[in-house]
Image (cartoon, rainbow over all chains, first blue to last red; front, side, top):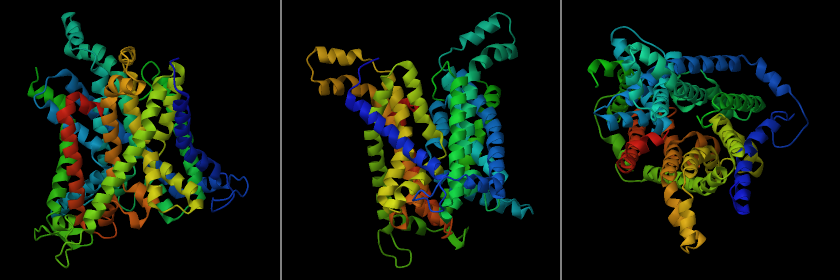
Amino acid sequence: MKRTHPALSAWAWLVYAFLYLPIVVVIVFSFNDSRFGATWAGFTTKWYGNLFARADVREAVAHTLEIALLSTVLSTLLGTLVGLGLWRYTIRFRTGLTFLLVMPIVMPDVVMGVSLLMFYAFVRGLLERAGWTFDNGFWTVLLAHVTFQISYVALTVRSRLAGYGRDLEEAARDLGATGLKSFLHVVLPLATPGVLAGALLAFTLSLDDFVVTYFTSGSGFRTLPVLIYTNVKRGITPDINALSALLVLVTVVAIITANALLRPRRSVP
Amino acid sequence: MLSVRRFLNTIGPGTLWLVAFLVLPALVMLAYSFLTRVDLARVGPPWTLESWQRVAGYDALFQEWVGDNVRVLWRSVWVAGLSTLLCVLMGYPLAFYIARQDARRKNLLLLLLIIPFWTNFLIRVYAWILILRPFDLVPSLAATFLGMVYAFVPFFVLPVYSSVEKIDWRLLEAAEDLGASPVRAFLAGVFPQTLPGLVAGIILTFIPALGTFVVSDILGGAKTALVGNVIQNQFGQAGDWPYGSALSFLLMGVVLLGLWAYARTAGQKGLEELI
């Protein structure tokens, strides 16, 4: 172990304490038998009971998972192809394309949300002239999520492949493999860890997204983050503490699992 | 070789998707910023510069400069700037601490950093209400700062950490051997090597802080509205889409300009390092 100054260690532990304080507080308060959480009024699990009894929570969980799964499949497909193309071909407008890919990553999500909101309204206006219409809901949210996921998948796949040259694929062809064969047996196995990491990233981004969903979902369709927001805005409900504690638990389990699965490489996906 | 067919098979669909759902909406937004608010959440002709005049601080009704909006923009910039600075102060040393542990501990510490990072953003912000309310600090600007630093510090630490891990420590030893004081040795031998991560970290903290409305909405209250809150309001209660479009186009413009400047200096690799 290399030397670290005691002051540096102390600082690090302080930062970690800061990072975990709210998480611990939320978990403790989810067992607090008081509607207004400032004081401890005894241990209870009734908020969890309340939570499980709420139909709107169950519905929001279902919506969140549906959107996350489907958008991840779509964006992984599209993003992997882009990542492979970026790796494999010399492209004339490479910097321009990278710029386009980085845009959804750095663009403030409120801008993305409101521009899609207006875009959907614009398209609806056009369709209405032809006698068609649609409501914001499942589909508009799905399309929006895929839009911010593609880049993450593409760049993850590309950076995973960056170390390998195209010569591997050419070697396979020289040894008699057809284009499809060399792709399936050489390129795909190399890309798979990147594809998985990208998909995992896309999935969690979708689960976590509030802002874009908020603007593109309309009034009838709520995901979990939107539900949490509307509940928090209405005032503190202890059910939300229970929900938060459960989500923290899910996150911890998911990260530890992902870390174990992706062990050989860096643990940061 | 890149034939058109190969291009369409790989990069084509994804690029097309981004053009359809990212570039086109931005253009629609630009167009709407020059239209007039007809009704709640409705826009129409005539074409006008009114929304942009309001962005520049003019009052639409009295045709005079009042500067309200400029104050909001300025507040957004300094709140984001100060939050970023606090993230740097907090996270830069932490990145060093993590990078200098042995492999097992390093992995554990990174894991402990990622858990809050991947916990739902709203919950992380909401939890501060529970903590700060007994002290009567919600809503307040101080609470907004705390929430922002808390929400964004992991964004900062991770890129800095990946820079610190690549540091060639022999440069530090060389500087020390040549008689440099510890501070000078650090500034000359170590600090420059962390610059790529530091810049990426600052961008990844400053931009979300500049555009956020959730943190200030939940913890800050109406008196400390940031540009994100004003935009949200135009697409909610106020229903003024042209004004909201102008504001968010401005926000996007600032971010893209910054990104362009960064791409000029950091190049292709730097752009890709942002994820």
